[in-house]
Image (tube, rainbow, N blue to C red; front, side, top):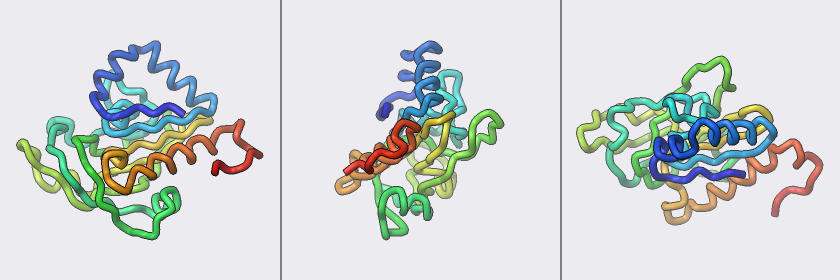
Length: 186
């Protein structure tokens, strides 16, 4: 499992260069798993020249990526509640200028499943209101034999939600072809 953390998705992508980005795609093709958090979700998208193109997602309102930081509410989908083993329909989570994701509708990448959708928003620094609400906050997709889970917000920086990253790691690990028949992770 590879975790691409927050920071600059563009910086990560440019530093990896095409050779490094291709190695990550090959890792996924062979059944590896990738978790992208904030900058790592920008990197995983299919929207920039430096993107990995491993999640069939575009970034909404690219102009206002620096829309501010703070707590937001997201609504978990049925798949999100199952993935994160949650009975809650909504959770409050820290947002730090992550991508507002929407389907890119690329034929060469399998469609992603929204695990959570933004219910509230941050619209500072000139960002228009009403854009963030309804966009994908957490997405789960497949690439080759591998699985990708991207978090636009930061569960690891939200008290009580760092376990969401653990559940995501378990999920992408279990999806590996080599994991078939193994006991579940404890």
